[in-house]
Image (cartoon, rainbow, N blue to C red; front, top):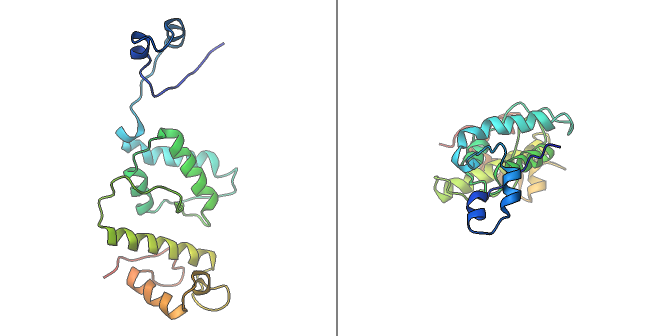
Length: 181
């Protein structure tokens, strides 16, 4: 029998302090591999994200080809208290909820880990992402029945004005944005 165990605790210290059985520790510590937490190796996040996408997308019926820069920046800025397992769960949830070939983080992803932008920029970024997602679901339609304006509860002209301010332009708006002026 081979046993693989993982923990975020310092078992050596726990044994020395009498909080962990030494016989069990020595059975587990035959070949220890120590990895720093994900928050200390942020350069691994893009590689891990793509590995998780590759592992799960076929089973979920997805074909993700890109992760938007803002989404990757959000993943890299987050502190990952749940470590790699949390990243895997976030990617899987995004795969399930992303409507097209672009991985979109949903509103459940906690973005509160020290993003460097000003609050007004973050609000605009969130609004832009939300409008783009709704436009994706509505096939790019702004007005009319089942258009993005109706889904968002705003007049189509108000939505067009907001899209212009946020830099969402052209047909296929959900895939193309330009920086606001």
